[in-house]
Image (cartoon, rainbow, N blue to C red; front, side, top):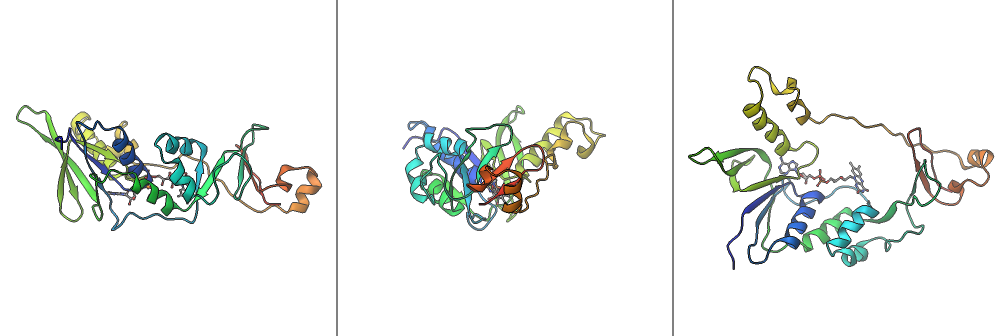
Length: 245
Ligand SMILES: Cc1cc2nc3c(=O)[nH]c(=O)nc-3n(C[C@H](O)[C@H](O)[C@H](O)COP(=O)(O)OP(=O)(O)OC[C@H]3O[C@@H](n4cnc5c(N)ncnc54)[C@H](O)[C@@H]3O)c2cc1C
């Protein structure tokens, strides 16, 4: 077997990290394979939530990766543009062609399909919570490799580190810490540094409330409203109505 071209560490075994491993497996050159290690903080690759809505754009990516049939088999219903169980999502600023909802499946089934498509030579390590990584330099001050330090005291090496460890990413925090130490004025701490304070995520979105609206009231207002015919969720920049007939 050919020697690995370089060593890749993926920090985080959520849907993002696993999908990344599938992509690497699909596109690596067979005569120069990659050494890929996925490091997951939890004791097992696990998912939460009852149902995962898979949107058309996600589905297209899965199609391109050759996982369409397996995912169709795992879906609650085969994907289609027509109406089915679950909400029909409509953008409030468009009158037609806004059915975005595609299919739904158990998150564990999605993870199962991804795991099936990761090359067997790629290793998944559980209970490996990254605390920090350090840059190991050679005698000339050039980057030799990264050293990953985990909460259980173990250490691993990689030539490339890819952070897929979610919204509170330890990889990103560490990247900004190292960049701050290297590039920014020493008398400014990172939380007050104009560039590096963005390493700490903060909420910039919109809070959306969902509530029930009586069908009878909707009928009074609009006898032919589409929300009386199917389960509808309209998204807009002002409060959105969600309805079930
Ligand atoms: C309530 C809810 C419902 C949702 N429903 C849908 C839906 O129906 N359809 C949809 O498309 N999206 C949905 N989403 C969004 C979707 O869950 C996220 O976009 C997706 O999980 C992001 O994947 P990820 O792999 O980037 O991050 P995550 O899912 O957060 O995975 C990160 C992984 O990294 C691990 N990790 C964290 N820190 C470390 C560390 N220091 N070292 C090692 N590993 C670490 C975590 O344990 C985890 O396994 C929903 C989100 C929520 C909160």
